[in-house]
Length: 84
Image (cartoon, rainbow, N blue to C red; front, top):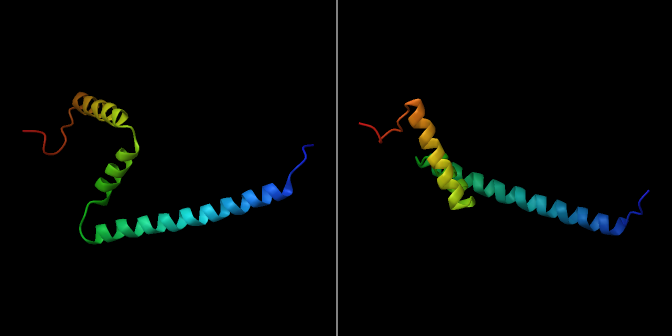
């Protein structure tokens, strides 16, 4: 059996718990921002998509959009505002 450094483990556990609490607080703040935007009539799903895309590498985003367009075209699905 491995020798466990109890002090190190306890300190790391406490630090993780502090960070998890901070993460929850930040998550709640972000949810509140989205809720305010939604109540003001904004499209929160669109904004979430933009935020998500910003997190990805732009190359990957472009590749994905190209593939989505190719699939839509193959399926005969024209996005609103792009047809006629």
